[in-house]
Length: 182
Image: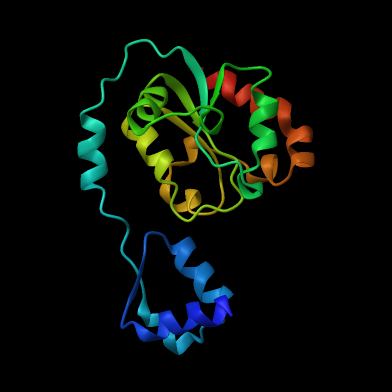
């Protein structure tokens, strides 16, 4: 029933706005929207003014004591087991293990050198944008919305983290990439 409800919402609106092409295409494909109705999907980006202003107010330290921050929920599509594995080798902040308010969360980001993601599903990735605005280096898979939002130097090959098994295979390359950024 949820798919039909989403499809009804799509058709009820003159336009449906998306932050990324990835997200728009995913919804159109998942809901089987015919081509003649795809004009309703408008990729507008996201207004960033409020986020930029909020990040300007945060004190960015000269020294960043943490190697990596992993800012995601403990959901299967975010692959926390990969972050847990990397935390055995690096000083890694896994935000969901901490009870942080928003100010403390931003402080942890600003104290970290790298913001790492291995998400399998990401329509925008606001935490990554916050990290970039706080001077944290993003290290992202070349998939999902990341593929259109970030420069190549900040992306690693998607296959490295397409699954935990792939991660185990490509872990040495990922660790080398992290060490190069540190």
